Length: 284
Image (cartoon, rainbow, N blue to C red; front, side):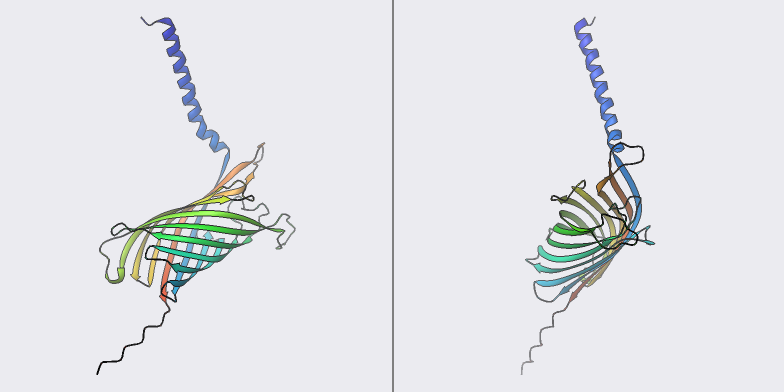
């Protein structure tokens, strides 16, 4: 027969365990109740061009045509330029400028006024190639300085900005790419790739979105030559708004997370602008 004090302790432990399990199971629901989810269908169409003009130096030119509802409406327009310096076969450095126009999309606009807004951006980047056998592994580290136009009032038809808000952002992307089959001359052939990139904001003007966003891509592509490849596939973007929303009937603001799912189509060009070396005179 069980000792009475021991039995009481056992029943108390069971109650505590049951309470703990109840709290754990309630935690996700409570966390979900403090978050508003906004779901969108997106399509991103991009071109990236590298213009090599010296042994270690090249220019970078990129345009991204980012659409909501897959293609019918604007999400963003992004133009990015830069200057690359190839330190060695594994490390490339880049510095540059980007111009972005963000449109009003989804149930909750990124800015409270609900206008499209511009952004000027400077960035510094390092890309590290770390191949493992036939698998291409790359790590990209980026630091951004952002100036975002903000409208504090909403007069009809206004397109002047009350202020330019400065913030900083860190980005890290890991990408793994593997050929599908044996590559042909010049690396020609199909391949599969997966990448994930996380964005973290910092500085005094970063409000709710220290975690700014995360991007995931699952792609298949074809390298036609060292100069050109085409790739596309599933793309997911999770964005946290920098402000809270107070729903009707609620007493406190809630964080808004966008879950943007769709596809991506990339074209990649690598052009060598260097003049070919003059032919040596034939020996007599």
